[in-house]
Image (cartoon, rainbow, N blue to C red; front, side, top):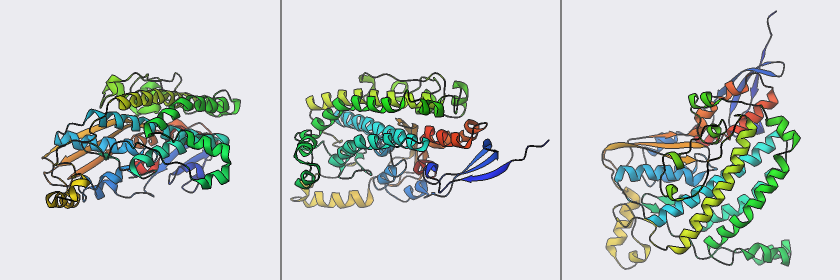
Length: 418
């Protein structure tokens, strides 16, 4: 007797479809026989748009790819430009970049954890995770003026040094929260940004413990994740997995250790890996990665406190003039306008630069024909490779498990459907 199957549209309106994923499911009852991901509903032609912009003008496009891992996207892009131009980055700028890469990793994993739990049916974790995200978004705002799309990294360093003071909550907050809570909220904000970040790293391990108390041994959470979406180490490598998706299958591969960049080789941290390659192992890997990121941030804060210095290359061909000089020198004023309108030219050549993004290997391929705009840009987004495995991971599972599998892939469509 032939099995009669039917076809179901999952998304793009579905709240668990993570933006604009349309999944065409072929089902036998509630069991998935085939899953066909359809993309194209978000497509903004980012790579093509970048080819009409100067190297600096294209930088803000990076924040809008994976809009949960903003500065990490910027990092890969500026590293590609630096490789093309042969620019050296001051050591202080490297520490700032690594510190914010790890802050971004925590931001990403908190969003991943909260939204995954929400997809599976746990509401409270989402609210807990956003409590900590709020503090880290304040760090973004302190250095760049923007809470999400920072555009803080620059070829040759970062836009500016870390601020000496943190914005404080106003008296309006005192009326809302009461004097005791108001004083507690402002206590960590009385010093510099580094003081605020250090205070966060003191509190954060206890926050991770709270997430684990809610989820790690929760029987419903384990029933929904253990044994679901199992991928063997061999298949994970064959499918192009990177990041927690690869390490969750037990493969020890992390670009921060295997192909170190910036100052990662000087830092002390471990690479968490899973055993079974299921959704639960990938959850545990992300939890452990947040603890390791916290260690890295603390090391960066300690070094940055002790070592002042410049934060961007002093090669004026690739950096704008100081604003204070523009008030007195016409030459600097002309340089400013010329830099931001025309940019700089890159030598003919091609480069590929990649980083250990929170979701995996995020790479930028740049091809230059000698002009002030890239001739070709190709973005290697980790989520795109992970999405192709959705059918293999879902077949034989139920519709409810598809939601769990999408959550464990930590998909953000800005980078997939670019």
